[in-house]
Length: 211
Picture 1 (cartoon, helix red, strand yellow):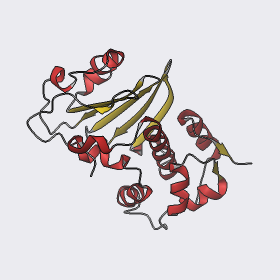
Picture 2 (cartoon, rainbow, N blue to C red):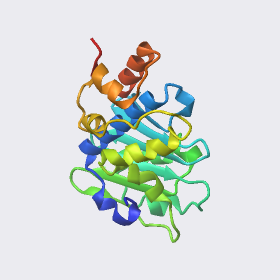
Picture 3 (cartoon, rainbow, N blue to C red):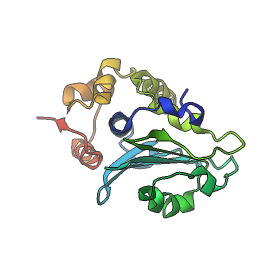
């Protein structure tokens, strides 16, 4: 399982960004109601910046900032003590300082931090002495579409009588392929508001063709 203990196994920036978008599209399909989603992606977070977010509604939260220079992950689990943030970010490239020490990260909190640049790949500062819950956050990013399917079957389908999404369809999103109506219906049986879905896909920055 992915965690800060084996962080070098995380996908590189391009693959990670593609996976984050795919997961966010899948969540938009599984939960048209924004407030019940777990994963979000905003391609227009700020000028030159894109953002992926995970939140469970109970305080656990992960933000991944993507820039041309690289990406940085901030994870926070409220049930764990927060280590010294200066130690967690030791060696952090200055381009990520505003993100890690500004808002909203400062208000959220930090239990682990990782960052990626093309020159040095994945890095982290000094780990805390205790468990940081990172495997609960990072494992969904393991590049395996089946991981998302198994997670969603528990999170979304527990009280719903519907078939599991097609592994081939989910894998196509992980590859960044254009979303079509055929692929949509291989993932969910019904879409009640296509205009809303299109708006979600535009926010994510994911290609689609429903013609």
